[in-house]
Length: 339
Image (cartoon, rainbow, N blue to C red):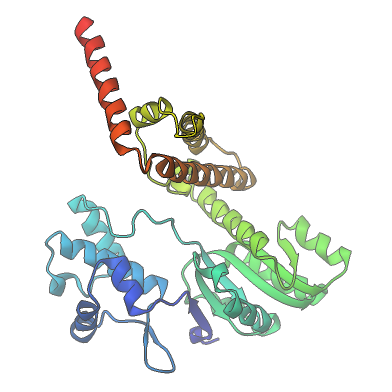
């Protein structure tokens, strides 16, 4: 089957790519004209549409150019070569702080049409859409794609033929995790799929459940690769406050004479400690990894949101906050002098 069947998602416009690479749109156009570093697709109106792979490739090149590399010398280099050059130079690539994009394939005409109307479901996924029926797809159709974390299959009705085909893809290692969205099916065939550790949900899928199952697929891929440190599985959000700043904020009182700064600071400290703890949890199997990766991600998000709340509390109290920081620094210095 022709690999062109698979449509990449998401697709980025040149303005988004310029922002995420730090390059000007004019620079992107020149690089496309001179070195072939352009968008893989164009819309019906001729607008450039960059795939996730296009974006990541340009981010690597932009990082090397920013570090002094000559664009003409690296423009034709493959991704692995660019990554090796970045590592040798000790340069952190642009976009390196972003979470690793799960790789997913979605199969089914109705499923792909549904995704067209629910773009948020693939906004954080390096996805390929196959607008074809399950029965028309063979194993070798996936050969042109990179290794996938998740295969999501739409199935109008579940029967012996459909289940056998899905199991065939699973056993062939098309993806680390297989998810089936069905319209009609009896308990027997649903149980058969679940026994094979294939996720099953009704079509159209619930967006939240689909996102969760995709996250589990990523966790399984990471565990198979031997990664059991969840801090590596899901990169953390940067801390917005140092421990000393949280301590200073905890000593402030709001204009309403309540304990908001203290309570929020205590919450952030507790969440940060638990976040660090959960990132180092060892896991024995992919199910544990999936659960713990969710705990780690949700804790980091909660900490990030509470830091936003603390920033709002401190917004109009910069002078008072700085004075408290200075007071604590002097106190700490005095204690060191006495020692």
